[in-house]
Image 1 (cartoon, rainbow, N blue to C red):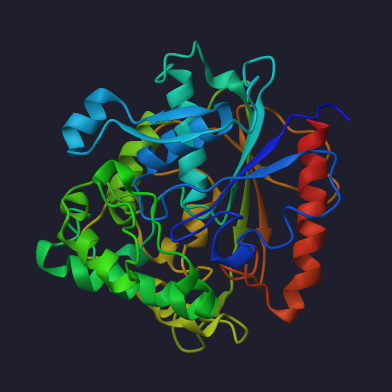
Image 2 (cartoon, rainbow, N blue to C red; image 1 turned 90 degrees about the vertical axis):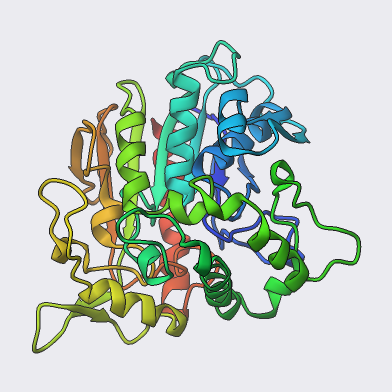
Length: 377
């Protein structure tokens, strides 16, 4: 075994921590499979921006009161400081780094955290080598075309002011359908920086009304904008691929080519509530290019929520070397390059909280091999 650095697991959009939803596990079998690595499951803002989530993750690892940054807080219009956390890994440093693991929006969140460490954003004397590896699982590394399905503006990426309520409620309805009545057990969206903490006895509809009426979704400092291609272009220019860090992605997909067209359609076992956004992504033709060389059809294969093209590695801006697809029993990896693994016939939730019967064994095997790989680095 090459290392025993802890692995920190960061959930995606509308995700939750181990103390929420009555203990219903967001990460499926990941925290329980045999592994030489200690694992910590984080809980960051489920609808917060990538930047704010990265700051919250940083202070959960090191401990202390979340500092979003004075300039950022002033620009976005929220408080500079947030919750106070005890430390997962108080000795965190270049000599005692961590493995960062993110699902869905957790992918760009952990990558953003590494870049904040690289520029010593928190004034801890940090650098990029505080992170041994980054692993993005079903990660939104290049944005999601499904954000436009939910109502984000194709030209700007912003949520139109007259659509905030509809976009937010449509997104929540999707997650509610996926996880069922478990969702009713959580009302705290970790939005203290926006003065949106849950009031005693407050119902979910009441909280959502306050969120809709807040400044949060009228700008760029929220999850929906952070997941657009427009936001990913900026993040991929800002976040570097650092030479001493190992980068891995796990790509999930569950679509197939339609018989009479080039479009991609959901495979029969896809979670039924992912089918509408999957059809949208699998056939959407955008009128304008988001970046030079943009091709709508590249983005059609998907896992119900995120396209395969976006999950593989950062590719739409910036310079990010690619190591290639991981082969069976591959043991050697080069730091400073992105290596990807494809899980066919696996939708966006199969790899975490909602595996179908055929994917339960696959998920256990995946995480067992996954943590063994991290321990061997």
